[in-house]
Length: 262
Image (cartoon, rainbow, N blue to C red; front, side):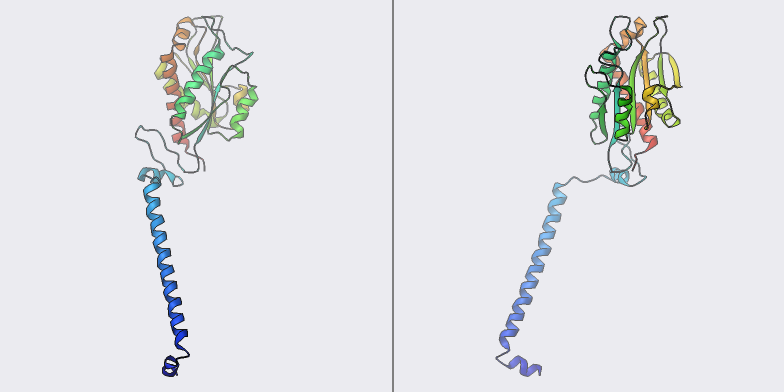
């Protein structure tokens, strides 16, 4: 049957048609393979690659360090969300320094420096400030901002006061719940080293921005503005730069230990 079927002129057009269909299908398949190969080659040249260390960091539970020693996020799901709070503001000036300067201005300057340092690493940090100008923010709204975004850390910056004795000096760091103690301790050490002020310790206290915080939170009393010598140093841009860098360094130490949430 096959010989007669292939030799019958009436069937030859069907064979030729089927042959053409097979040829077209083969050409289409080859073209599709070539297109996929072209797209793959183009994406490898254009899209950024991931280093071996970054690949380890993207694995759940993985870790890697940058050349400067700072921690990479433990997963690729997002950046560390940090809320920096400049204490006081607006109608609430805070402490009046020995020079007459107000705490609200000092805290905004230092908080801005901290935020600017963190923003230099946009792939690592998502930075929020409770205020960026001379505005008063309710205490619960400050911690509320951190709660709303499920921040990895909330840092409230202050200058201390003790008008009864202008000789009182030093740096204090506060926390409220046990989950925040490590954050306060991590920042306190670098601050002492950078500023050289008296160590007044890391303490538990029920400040409202701490008690209403649902995320790791610390309140930093950098130094005493009512101490003339200490205030003069705190108002120097160089000292504020050193303090800001110390806060960032301590924060990174805390985050490296805590790890990046999923």
